Each structure stands twice: as structure tokens, then as C-alpha cells.
Length: 112
Length: 112
Image 1 (cartoon, helix red, strand yellow):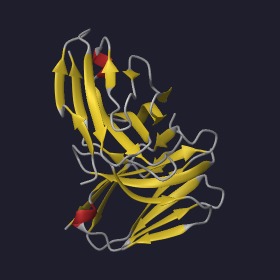
Image 2 (spheres, one colour):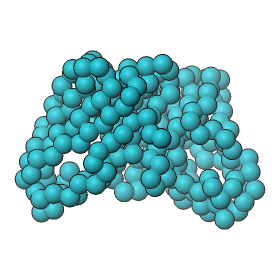
Image 3 (cartoon, each protein chain N blue to C red):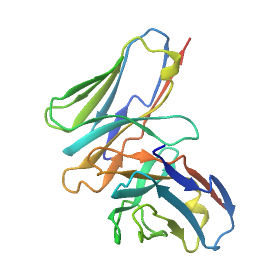
């Protein structure tokens, strides 16, 4: 089954403790992206990647890092999480942004 | 400020009624997509429109892309309770099609 898999689904952590949210896709897509979804603000792009070793900032990249060492994986790294990063995070992949994405099921992150 | 403005924000209607959701921008988009999102899940792609003036139909859903590629609409005929959900428009800006923007969404509730 074609899918984007994110882990974990739920995560509660403390301020400053580094964490990684994993994302994997099995569709051989070149394009992958991370979003956060907040009430009243909608979905906002954090980082995107056009291919292996090619990444760029979206609208809200501060406090996040990404890497794309393999085509299928695109982890999101929070080096020093803060409470304002509490949010619902989505990973997505697609052949290109032009035609739209397949989204993962989301990771609900709470930073206390 | 959202690059894509959706209206209305909320819509509660009876089963069998028709409705239209609007997505507007002052920017030109190379393509526009519509997604539907259920609570706790990732958005699911419904359609992509790429040509100004394009109309696409998906069963009872009709999607239109404005001639100037700055706006789009989603029309649902004879709404059913199964249509309940959050409808999101999204698109790749013509200046940088790798950067992707979402509207704030329209929350639709169809009452039986």
C-alpha cells in the first residue's frame, strides 16, 4: 500500500530535550515536506526537499532541522524544543508540489 | 496573513443542500489543490487544477480554477453527512513552485 509513515503518533517531551520525528514513504517520490498545523493558522510549511541531499526552508523553519540522506526518509529534528513548538506535525511526499501530496497521519507533539 | 483565503470558515447545512467554498489569493498559483481532512488524520488530496478556467468534477464535487489562476471554488451538490470534514485549498506559488501554501480551511458539517 502506498503510504507515508510518521512516528511517533503522539509525543510529550520537556523543553530542551532533543527529539526526532521520523517520516518514510514507499512511493519513490522525489519531493517531501514537513508541515505544522495550529488552530487559526492552518498548515504551514517548515522545510521541503526536492531530492536526496537537497533541502530548503519553508515558511516557519526556525527551531527545526531536516536531513535527506535517502530518498524514502525525511526526518524532522528539534534540537532544543520549546513550548511554542507544541503542534500537530505532518510529513508529506509527492512527485512534485505541482500535483499535490500524500500526507502521513500526523504526530501530535506537546512540549512542556 | 494567509496567502490563500478561504470562505466561509464554517458551514453547517442539512443533507441534500448545495454549497460552495471559495479560495482566493492576490498571487498567481501554478497549480491549486483541494484536500479533505478528518479529525486526527492527514489531509487527503481530492483534486489538482492547473489551467486557468479549468473545471473538474468528482462525483458530486465540482472544482473550478479561476481564469487568472488566483482563485478557486469547490461546489458540492446534494451534500451528504459523509461529506463532513475540513476542506483545504493549497497551491504552489508561481514564483517558487517548491513552496507550498494552504488556506485556513472550511469546516463543513452536514446534518442528516
